[in-house]
Each structure stands twice: as structure tokens, then as C-alpha cells.
Length: 297
Length: 331
Picture (tube, rainbow over the protein chains, first blue to last red):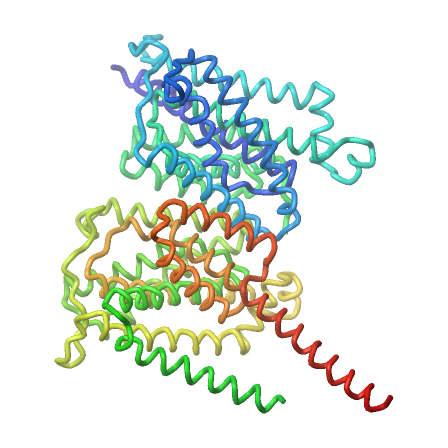
């Protein structure tokens, strides 16, 4: 393998894992921009969404083996409902101090993690890929079909979300209520419903990430911990609350992780990713996209 | 009336002091003493974090890793160089405080969510150093065969004897914390927390106090680490993570943010409850999550706030009572 193809191989891996982080980061950003709340349960929501979809695909419910695409949709739908429930729980939290908010959402994550451990057991399972396991070779770069599916579907979802926010009436209403809650309300926008929609979208994105990545990673009730932290890092890297920022942040974080694993040292990957994140925050706290979404102190 | 209250308070303090002194004898088994020791270690952590976070508003979520710095410093000094407890304890405190000061450096540039994230990231990176630097730290296997301390030939080799060391450290930590928060430094901390710009305008050296807040929480964590390492005689990196910092944070919030007694109440409450609820296994953790949400939503000041409210209520009730009496007399 030539040097360039190794580089592109690493890059593809990074983009794959990066689109996973980007979807989770979108969950953080959608919640933050609509409710001004950092939802530290996002990692657990990602895990819950994965289970909601994968249990149907794996035949864990009444031995039904639902096709992958249908399981994917079921997972998304269940998590969308979860988002609506969450909005109701979070509504009184949005007015609270940052630390209290953080703790309440962590408490929620704790509940979800442990409930799913009780229901499904602490040990996880591997998921069979719905697509063949032989990699495609494109210009000397080996790409797993599942990885291609992950990247393709993630990108379509992210573009779809962006179009929805910018082009449709509902999207405009959501942005309006995110920018100025009071005025949006005065203009007759049902802001609470818009927040519920934003949270639903965020939860759906996390579920999509989990179900798409399930055949590549291992599914267990603790799968959301690391992804939740990295998704948050990605969201902050791109500028918390910014939708394009979350996508850029996720991709940059994923690529960074893959490159440092490939070229520097695989044991230090995570540490390097953390340090780079700290440096970015110090140098440019508004994130790499530079959209100012957080009130400066 | 006030005199009686004061006498009652002293009786209460004396009773608690006596109880603490004789606890190893009245405990039914060694396990209970072990839990008491554990509570002491977590108390040091939560006192330190409460000073940094509750008083100075500096989010130090690298606390778990700083605890690890203390534990590893003590363990390495002891197993490799044979440095006794009495010397490795202060050295661990210094090491953790210095590293905490470095963790605090980003607080010059970033605040709130960002500072929380930066300290989480630095803490996790430090934990990875503990896991990956196998030749020094023993990697994921940790360090074993740590000796318990020896007091001039008198071996402190069980939980009952070790209990008194922890008790002394906790009392020292509490008294010192009291001194810190109720004097000049404490005033500067509160000014920093409530209004950064105003504190600066009033001539508070904000940078110095920010770093000091981090260093203080680090010092407490260092002491907790050294005590932990030599109590359990074995350490591994899996406990020195962000999760531990979160547990401490929960303790402070349940007890009362910005209140040292709150730290004590929260820590003791959570750890004792933890023992009683073990039978429920996982459901216990679910209940724990629900409890956190309930506290945050309905009691944001923690248990201490509840006590204060009750005190106010009683005072008003007493005032009302005496007023009613005087009214009756006048009538």
C-alpha cells in the first residue's frame, strides 16, 4: 500500500467515525440552541436509540427479524417520541443554573443507562452487518459497505436537517424560537412545541448514528459514555448551538482521532484528541466555525 | 431562648465528637469502619471541590484525576523509594496542588461550559497517562503491595487504627476550609464567583485567586489520594476518572453548593444510603438518578437549604408566638 492510500484509508475511517460524532453533536446543538440547555444525557440517548432500533433487527422482541431499514425507522421514531417526553422534563430545567442543569441531565442519563442495563443486561452483543462484509476497493482504498452506508446516510440526514431548518416554515419557526423565545411567542409560534421538535430531531440523529454504527461497534448499555463525551467535544469544537458547527466539529474530531491513531500512537489517540480540543478552546472559544452562539462572559 | 439553643448546639457537637471518637469500638464489624474510612476520603474530595466550585465558581472536573495524582504520588514514593506515610502525604498534597494549578490555567481564557469541558478533557488525558505509562504507573493493573503506615514502630495496619488518621485529616481539612472561606481568601472567592468584572474592578487579583481555588481543591484531592492508596494498599486507574468527579459533584449538590456543612451532609448521606440500598442493585442506581433530578428541581440549594428554610420557619413561628402572647397581654 502506498503512502497516499494509507492516508486516505485513515481519512475514510476518520470521516466515518466523525459522521457518527457529528450526528451526536447535532443532538447537543439542537437542544442547546432551542432550550439553552446542555444535555449530558445525549450519550445515553444515543445508546437508547440504538437499542430501540437494533432489538427489532436482532430479533430480540418476539423473535421478529425486521429488515435493517425498517428497524432503523422504528428506532428513529421511538427516539423522536423520547425527544418529546424529554422536552417536557427539561422545560423547568432551562431556567436553572448551569451546574444544576448539568447535574439533572446527568441524572437522567444515569436513569436511562441503568434501566437499559436492567432490561438487557450489562454485557453487550455484536450486530451482524446487513451489508456484505467484504470491503469495496475504490482507488486502492478499502471501504466497508457498512462504513459507506454510515457516511452516506449521515450526510444525507445532516443535509436534510439543514434544508429543513433553512427552507421550511417549521424550520424558520424553530430558528425564530431559538433566537428569541419571547418574540417568537408573541408572533404566535408555539415555542414549546418547536423545542419539542428540535429535541426530537436531535434524538433522531443520535438514534440514526447508533443504529448505523451498531454493526461496526459493539452494542452495550455503556456504549454511550465515550460517544457522549466526544459528541459534546465535537459540538463545542464547532461552536455549541451551531448546526453546521456540530457537523464540522464532529468530522474534524473524528479525522483528528483517526490520524493521531494512524500516525502518532494508537494508545495516545484519545489523549491527543482531548489536548487538541483544549487548545482549540483556548485559542478560539467560539469554535472552528466561528458562529457566536454562546453569550460571552 | 438563645442561650438554650447555644447549649443544645454544644451538646450536639460534643455528642457527634464522642460518637466519632468511639466509632471503631461501637461498630458491629470491620466493614462498617471501612465504610467510615471511605466516607472520610470522599469528604476530603467534596470539601475541596466545594471550596473551588461552591465558593469560587471554578469548575474543577479534573478532580478524579487529581485524586489519582495524590494516590499515585504516595504509592510510587512508598513502593519505589520507601518514603514513609508522614512524608509522602504532604508530598502528594503538594504534587496534586501543583498539577491542579496547571489544570486551572485555562480558566484565564475560558469560563462556564467551556471550563467544565476543558477540565474534563484534561482530567481524562491525565487518566490516560496513568493507563498508558505502564513502566511507571503499572498501567491498567495499577500498583499493589502498598504498605499501610507505621507510627514510630506502632503499625497502623487495620481499618480501626487507620480511622483515626482519616478522622484527624478530615477535621483538619474542615477547619482549614472554614478558615479559608470565612476570611480574606473566601471573600475574594465569592466576589470572583458572583461578579468577575466587579471583583476585578475592586482590585481582587482574579487570576491569582482562580489558580488558588484550583490548587486548594487539588490539595484536598491529593490528601484524599494518599489516604486512599495507603488504606486500600492497591490502586488502579479506573476509579480516578471523570465519573468520580461527578459523584463528588452530586454529593455537593445534594448537600448544598457553597456550604462546607453541605459537603459533609451530602457525602455522608449518599454513601450511607448507598450501603442501605445495595440490595436493590441496579434499581438503586435508577433511584439515585431520580433523586438527583428531584433535588435539582425542588431543592436546588441542597439539604442545607432545607435546614435553613426550616430554621427560618421556626424563627418566624417563635416570633409569631411571642407577638401573639404580647397581643394577648395588651388585649
